[in-house]
Each structure stands twice: as C-alpha cells, then as structure tokens.
Length: 247
Image (cartoon, rainbow, N blue to C red):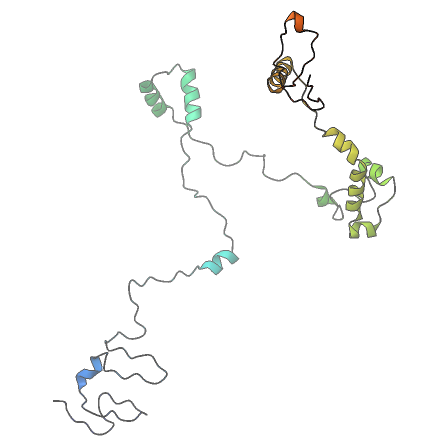
C-alpha cells in the first residue's frame, strides 16, 4: 500500500498547483507514465541525468585559431631552413654518362661516391627585384591609350568625327552596327547561297532508267506490214488528250 502524506507534501505534488489526490509513492517519480507534466513545460525526465555542464563523449580542447582568425590574417608559408634538398638525379645521370657508367650496379655505387643535391633559392643578382615601371618615376603616369589618340578603325567607322557622349551612354553604336549589316544583307545571302548539286553521268543514267520504267509503254510496238497504214481503233494506254478511235 502507498504511504500517506500531508496535503501538498507528497513526492508527486508540484509547487503552485493543486495537490495530487490518491495514493502517492516515491517510486512514482521514476515512472514515466505517472509523471505529471507542468503547464507550458516539457515532460520531466524520470532518469537521473548528470549536471548541465556535463559533456557527453570526448571533450577536446578548443583551438585558439578559428575560422575568423584564419580568414582575417593571411600567414605566408615559411620553408623549413633545416630541410635538406633532394637528390639531383638529372645531374648524377649526366655525370655518369660522361664517365661511361652504363649498368645499374655501377650506377648505384657511382651515385654513392658522387652525390649531387638540388639547388635551392634564387641565383644571386637575378629575380631579386622587379624591373622599374614608369609609374615609379612619375606618379601621374596613366597606363593604357589616351582618349586623344584614336585608332584607324575608329576613324574609318565614325568618319573622322569624335563620338558624342550621348551616343556612348545610349548605346546607339549598336543600332549603327545593325543598320550597316542590314544594308549588306543581300551580300551575306549571296555568300551563303546554297548551290544545287551538279548532275553526273551516273545520276543522269539512273534518272533516264527510272523515267523509262514509270512512263507508259505502247503495247502495239510491232505491226504487220499490211497493217501499217491502218489507224488504231482502241487506245489501250488511255493517254490524256487522246480520244477513243472507233472504226
């Protein structure tokens, strides 16, 4: 049987809410089905959980240099001064060829006796500084073409006149280009005209044979000599424009 508690002092009573009626047991606090949910809050957990500052899993220390520090500060790569250069196989092979070292066994011992490493760094006096530029001596120097100097193409197209700022802003040069090409439309069509294919002896022979096969053939191709002057009484081919001739 359940233990009796004073009114409002049971293990399931919630402060500020009406007391729970009926039997109350301490074990009911760990039963999820019997827990009473507070108004406006999620259902309470019946399992004993660690404190709020507890971290589940492996907790790694936070890196002091995050994405913000990496993007706002660019650090250039600094080569390791203690790193040794790699072997110069090209130079050792050239030296071995000069000394008549041809077999792989001789090549291995020759490289051990005459090691060569790659050269690091830039040669002295070369590529140490960029060439001087005109703007280094004259701060007002402007790179590019001046507006006062016009090309021959601009003079030919515009007829020697200076382009107006209104035409540049409104893009009227595009309309001029369209008008010039429309005037040359017939020239473009003539250049792209499709030429009909020319007939060959083989194609002419095939065409004549096909025409002879589809043309109607007169069945009376042969007549006796005494009937050569006799007119035909029946037209078996029924050609258009010919009437039936009856004797």
